[in-house]
Length: 454
Image (cartoon, rainbow, N blue to C red; front, top):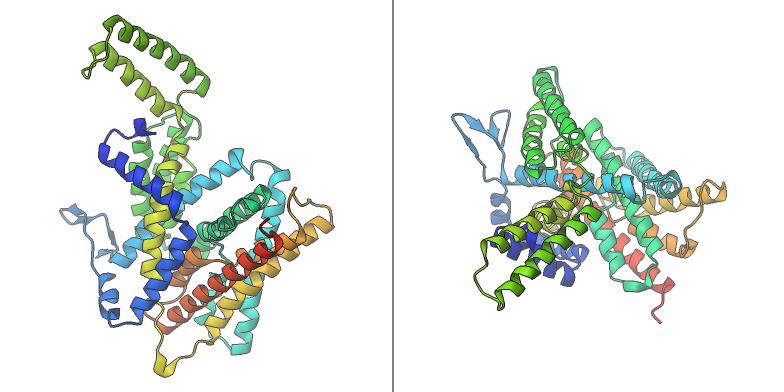
């Protein structure tokens, strides 16, 4: 792996992230950050906490600012939600593409059951939210949050499942992963359709972004494997989407689908070539007789050939995914949680069971499990598909509960649904935190009872 990072600082960074990933569960880390954030938001540090998200960013010159929207510089909170979350959705897009090419979504037979389950998991939370809204008599503004409980958090749900160790069948993990990925696709579509503010004045920005997107597709067709090529044009598309009123996170997903999944050198050719170079290196060592701390020019030449070949044998898609996974799981997502999970409790006028809170909470806790479980049962009952080896109705129920963990994307949708600093946003965040927490705890204990440790 170190051959991919010429800069030693990056080697140390990724080495640190690898060690962190081995010892710290991303889902548990998110939960801890969320709890710490809630404590800070309800402590004397609240004023400091709110102030750090209002700092403005600038990158550019001569009147141009890359981090701006319609002439206004992005704040820290907007940088997290619009810029860093675009990287998160870029990684999601890479995972979706990989699953569609070689994973659980690569064939109809493999994909149909988690797709059906995910559809149920998106439809029923909306139904639950709608019925609760009727009981409380929601206004049109309050109804804007109807999509919040649709989401399933991949890292959080997989993280809770990982706490149960090797007792969980691999088929159950694959089913949850595929379901969460399909769920993300649904969330992306909702963001693109309902939370973008495209106007006719934005047509020029959109037109230029379409041209750049076509260039990326052409680069893929011509087998341009330079990651810098896709990164630079991807950033330009992100900026154009931001100015056009289309939510910039959508740019991350679209750019991800243009990244080549084929390596420049296939593994067989690489192994044959590296064997020849290693044979030559062995001869240079035997000719010299003893090892030296200073390499000969010939040795450096062949080591450089091996390093270059190693860079080219991994496809840009897998390289991006491998490099970004640790950064997203242990930096971007915890930072997002720290920025968005700050639920404030007004103890003088505390109303934890407001309409929006209850709608989101029940949407995640009741709607998700009902939708996932019932749609899967119907698919099996009518022989559209069948349960994989290791899956039973009991462990599927526990897995359906984990589908109610909607933390990251649900908080993201809450921020898009309600105005910043509003009581409605605070209520929605509380519903997301409680719904995700209860779903995760119940799912964990149900699966723990089903898979009793031997």
